[in-house]
Amino acid sequence: MSNVVTRATTLAAAAILATTGASVGAAQASALPSAPTCHVADLNLSLGEPDGAAGSLYYPILFTNTSTHTCALRGYPGVSVVDVRHHQIGTSAIRTGEPVDTVSVSPGDTVTAVFRTNSRGVVPSCRPVSAYVKVYPPNSFQAVQIPSHLRLCGAFEISPVQASDNS
Image: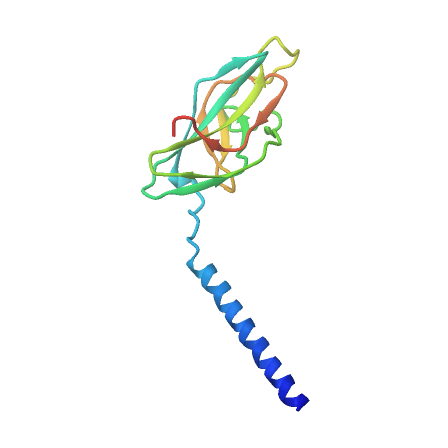
């Protein structure tokens, strides 16, 4: 008789596991896939107009989706400045430490990341003037060089990619 009870318990447990597993599997299968990561080929990168405040200059890097599909960006871009020979001037931008979100970018929409440096005269040392700002979109091993004559002074920080106010 204990054999019958044990067998019935085992069958009941197996049925519960099968039902639970099937429903978990069904929920996972029906979840919508997230948008693919934006690649350099999907994007047009440019610099927006700088904004100054409290001895700092803030430069928005604009990531515009030029593809025909929605893609996503998450995290911090890699940013440095380079000379006319495409040699890096100083160190790359350091991350601000702000939390990151996944930002969905529909065709034609623009999202931003902002880098900050000190205004000239606020700190005693500045780098030579750049010829380009070199930007690696988040999770990309391919960079875009944006023509720009910038003089970085003191701090060089980058924020994560965020939805633009006008997107």
